[in-house]
Length: 214
Image (tube, rainbow, N blue to C red; front, side, top):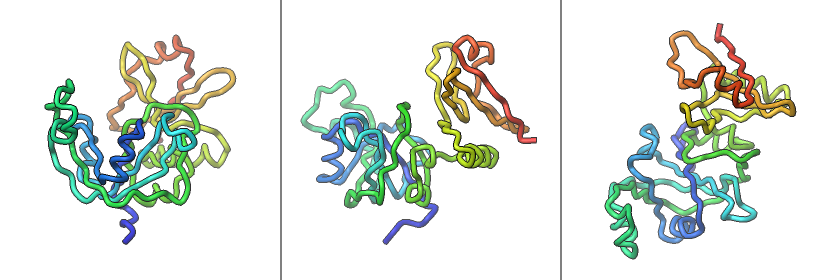
């Protein structure tokens, strides 16, 4: 039976062939408890974003599986052949999986970006043409994203800027010939995660555009 259209899907990073084989043959996947997105714990579906280790399947979501159980165990219990690993006592979710299934089409990332987890839902997983289509935003972000797509503007959603001074995530990043442009949607009463001063962004070569929901 196919999942409900709004069933939560956790897209998780898989960066080595051994972990993919464990998911395919032993039907489980591990997630560090301290790093798991709280709203995705217990999700009924997992999908996997594959890195450069996977050749022709790299930088894309190609597979999904039903998640039948989420159990907390130690790494030592999961991988008894590595008893002296530095994280042997760390707690993990052991997510029990059904059969690994291939998506109707790959969901590629158009450009390199750091991806660990994406929380989305089943309908988006089925309809996404690329990674940005999996991401959720506010109603204003969704409208702006639709406008970018209609205009043929290639934007990256929820783009994390690697900056030592402070964490900074832009609602959208657009990489132009003249330099990168960051776009944020400002809404009344909305707490913002955009903590890096605009001047600091300018120093890094970014132009920042702020759009008001009003």
